[in-house]
Image (cartoon, rainbow, N blue to C red; front, side, top):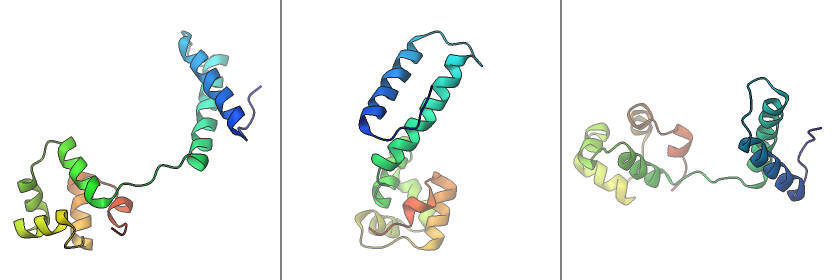
Amino acid sequence: MVKPIKNNEQYEDALARVYTLMQKNIKPDSKDSDELEILSILIKEYELIHFPVPKPNPLEAIKFRLEQINMSEAELSEILGYRSRKSEILSGKRKLNLTMIRKLVEKLQIPADVLIQAY
């Protein structure tokens, strides 16, 4: 029977069980597939509470996203308005304003909650 994960030992046991289940050729809507789904949800919730991942720095998120989508900094200038503004923002001399954040969310699809953080 699947139970809530309350400590690291139970967490490790759940991970081991998920690994075992993933090695099987599980059929959809089977007892094993249901167990795997439930354990995955429980593990995710435990990890969110006990192993939170900090949000990235807004400037690092922009640079990472540019690299990810193979966009040049010159193209970023078009989104932000001016080449000098882009340089000031990426160097940390100028902060993002609301209009810039909206454009970055729309064009680069970086979550707003990442971009509005203090840096």
